[in-house]
Structures are given as structure tokens and as C-alpha cells.
Image 1 (cartoon, rainbow, N blue to C red):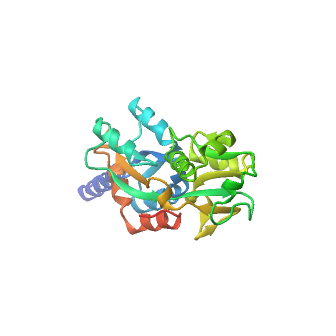
Image 2: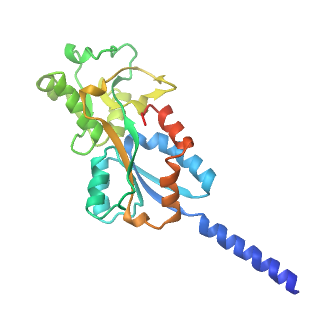
Image 3: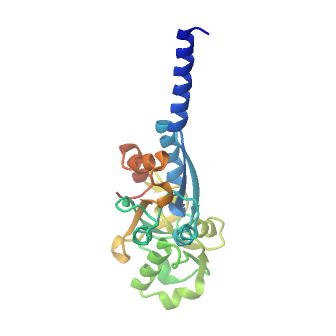
Length: 251
């Protein structure tokens, strides 16, 4: 092989090595309510950067326990702002990396059209057997649901009707399958293009519960990892924000 050919081969190998170094994977823990939008964001991120997103969805409370137990997650998309702050304070999150990526909206939803009125009066009528709510100890949307029920003065009347989901995804499933006539779910799960994909619902006024600020944070296992740090930056781009707002969140 002559010198020119050797240089060309060396340059090609270096280029491939560089590309391999740039292409990386990021282990992401995503709150169940954000799983759908995250799939779209991940696709755009992968196309833009070459990095691959390995996504696991579930309840924020369980993710906290798993992260503290050493789970390999590098980025957390929480359904609240308290868990990322706690992880940062406890040394499991990178200081200064967390920020609010979305503000969630709670909705009382039924899979049946005209079942839920525009003011949520159906809750006061009580002509239903089951009301699905996410576990308030694990899921911030469940906590928001409990605050809403309390604000309506219906805690005692509705508690016997509760069907409790481990996370907001399971809660939505209870209602979608008819195992519960009604349920408090994330608007992002049932909205598309500004209207309900199916069924009927009441968007709960934000004044009836604490704001559902959803923060993300770079975890210690993701510190210095190209894909993890690139994803943190990508979430602040117009492309990511467009997906978030289209899914029914505020910024």
C-alpha cells in the first residue's frame, strides 16, 4: 500500500471511530404521562444527533427508589418538580441541570362520549361505580386528583369508588377498558390536536390543585455522557417544545 493509500485508510478509520464516539445511547426514565410525547421527541433527537434513546416509562415515585438503588438511568423526566430536586440534594442528580420541561394538565375523562360534562358535575351526581385515580403517593397526577376532589368537597363520597392505578398509564387503561367509568388522567393521554381523541372530559382548572410542574434532571450516571448531555440540550429546542405543546402541556 502506498503512502497516499495508507493515509486515506487511516483517515477513513479515524472518521469511523469519530462517528462511533459521537453515536451513543442514553438510558432515560420517563414519567408515564410523558411516554407518548417522549417517543416522538426521541425519534427527532435520534435523527438530529445519531444518539439513541433507551426509554423506560413508569411512576416517578418508583423511579426515585430505583435510582437510589443504583438503576442505570442517566436522565429522569419526572412528573413533578420535587423528585428531581430531592435527587439533586441527595447527590444523585447533577447540580444545576434540572429544569421544567412541561407543565401538565389534569382531566376527568370517560371513554364514552357525553359521559363527562364540561364542568365536571358528573362527580357530584355520583351515578357511577368506579373512579380511577393514580396512586397519590407515587404519581403527581394522582396527588393533583386528590387535591381536586378535596377542593370539590367530595372526598368522603368518592373514596369508596376509587380504583387506584400504580401510575397514570395504568389509570388511563382502567378507564379506556371500561373497568372504571371515569378517571383522572393526564390531558396528554387523551388529547390530540386540541380535542379529545375519544370519549368526553373535563379539563380541571389549574386553580383546583398545585401546579404539575414536570422537571427533568441529568443524573450522576449521565454526567459526561455525550448522549445524555445532548438530550438535555435538545429538550430546550423549538422542535422538542413543539411536540410538548401539541401534546397538551404548557411550557
